Image (cartoon, rainbow, N blue to C red):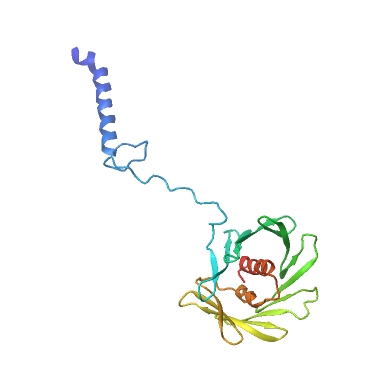
Length: 234
């Protein structure tokens, strides 16, 4: 019988037609990631940046007349930080990188390592590369004490007052304060006479801004202390 003779061939043809119709109905899979209609699609999103400088928001501090003072760029894991300062007198870049033995080493570009920070549960110590103490920072719930001796004698004090203010004291005398304007995402640093000295447009509310009033601390060391408080979210 002719029909019986050609049945296998007919089944093959029907199967091929069914497969072709299925591919057309599904629109086909584009190897180039094109969207329907032949237009180029967005494709997969690019991988997230792993550059430590861009992994977290920058914090820029300036004077009321817009003169840049210092800029902090922490990485997302709170392990390293880049500090830029002295833009008006010759920009300097200071980098802090976490190393072994609970230390963070800070290097000034062009000058090598200048300080190391020994980390602890209740604070940290800023030391020379040889290990000599420069500044001891003791942290409690509502106070941060900064002194140049192991006993924490005659310290600078950052005293947290609620969620909108930090008082700055030296030898128990107020030398200024930090005010947080949360409705405007702004931070202002004022001296004891209420004169505005520094400001930052940010929602990072930290006691670290008060360290700017501690003029007896050299700039690089002052910014290292600020960076450490920032990384601890204090």
